[in-house]
Length: 500
Image (tube, rainbow, N blue to C red):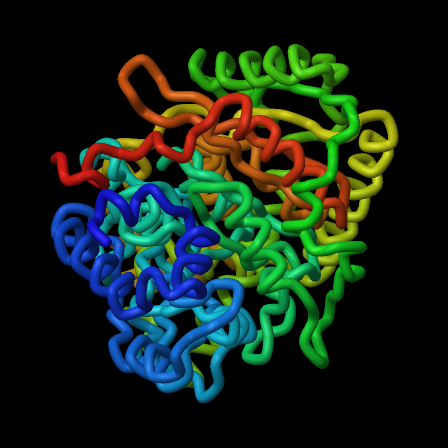
């Protein structure tokens, strides 16, 4: 098989060819590795090759739903036994898990050949992948731009034609944001649909879900069938689907009640192309017979952002404290992470409890909204993929942070409540390019990015579709209908085909 032929197949088709004996797993892995070696210097999407894991899988003569399909996983949550899970931070380089994560085990049992880990921002905290440990991930459509985050390395690998789909996770848009930036499909499942075990229980109080980024809807449905289900001891467990998600794609989709909105919930600017993407998608759905109206749930976007900041305020100090117990030093963390940690240490347990209670309000309001509508469309991104460095602290901010850290004043200022306004301003600044994605995480509902729009400059801009909790099947059916109406599979970045 030549690489151009490899690109014409999704993971489902590649696995079928392996099962029929038309191509071998070593042959597919060689194609994926050759492409990875070609594009890695430009895109910087791999953090760690996994040659021993791949070789052991080939020795098993992989069979199953993903038989022989080359695969990469995000260097976060998806633990590989005996290999550090870096989370994009120097602090975790010495922490070595002893067990495979459930998601990795299920991929291997399904026959996937996992050969590398992918790049991300430190602790997965940003919508751009730019850790100081590994450096930024460049976008295959325009290497001057970032691939998005936090699953940016996985998105770059798929968009560059290295693998047909890749693993990642989503705690505030981390599958959907890079998928939108790179012209790919991604579904964030419902809370409890896929286990984070055994090394972890709930991730970010249950806001974070495992999943994949892919080029085809049926691949994401297949991956969800492979990955779904709880492990013993999981804190959340979604009810088992009535049928396999792949099978649901073969059922006729009833005409849906579709709502759409385009205004930023934070009142921040939204690019006209992002608005056009949603409006065009709404018109397509109307032409396909769905009932469409412009409407949004009555949820305060500023309250969502405040709750999301509270999540960070609680999680970051806890992560740093655990890393220090494993031998990490404060200096192993990036300055912005340390500023957020100092802010979080002054955040009270009562304030956190009130914030977590607000998640229930969001979930109940969304549930009422989905009593009247089946799907809600918004932009995924408020603007096209960001140029590298766009979200970097301004020189004065960076200098001030460095001075506060160096002089030891960071902690006292935080305890006195004098750091809050600065952190909140930075937080909103960093959310402004993607203010639409966090609500689904807090409410636990499924949401997906649909790669339906490219700007006149040739940059992808996705459309987000949000559904009711536990109903990934309807979202996947809708995505398949749009994929058939406006195909995107063959719309690859030029670098995937050898250009650039």
